[in-house]
Image (cartoon, rainbow, N blue to C red; front, side, top):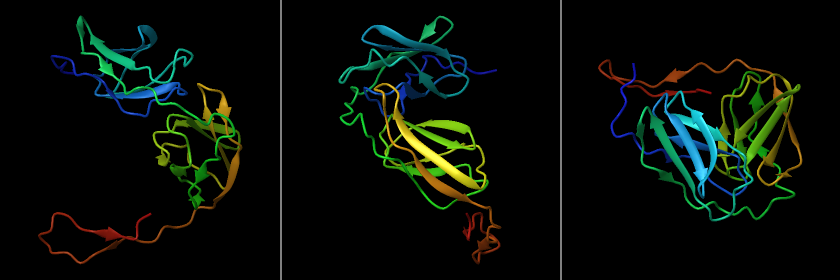
Length: 202
């Protein structure tokens, strides 16, 4: 049973907003709420959320630089106050996007990759052995987490602007075989200590 707060909290825009995106991250949500996303009075998307945050996808065609998104959540007959995004930022480079840079080394079984040189609110696409996964760029540099465990071989990546049609060339790196991680090394601590420092972790 979930306690429904009264009044309902105002949603929070938790990812960059640009004229070339097609997804936005909303936080401050009540599980089970129906969320409505609109721009200039035009409804973009309606979805029911299962957690306190959610990515909401939409058709990007109504987006223009300087416009503002509005988000409202509803539970039963109650509605939150509307949340307003910052004005949609322009994306000046839409063609020949920079190739994303993947932090190395990446080894088998890794489920996160450090990504840089990407356009905020664009998308990262990574592919290995025909398995394709996408992330929304939450910043120009970030950790792409939750990936399918890597396997030794070639990892390919490119970035896309779903709302504006642009994309970069593809980059490739080698995923190395997994190695046995070093044993963790706890520092000397007092028997009464409630927290210790451990080094040598991956």
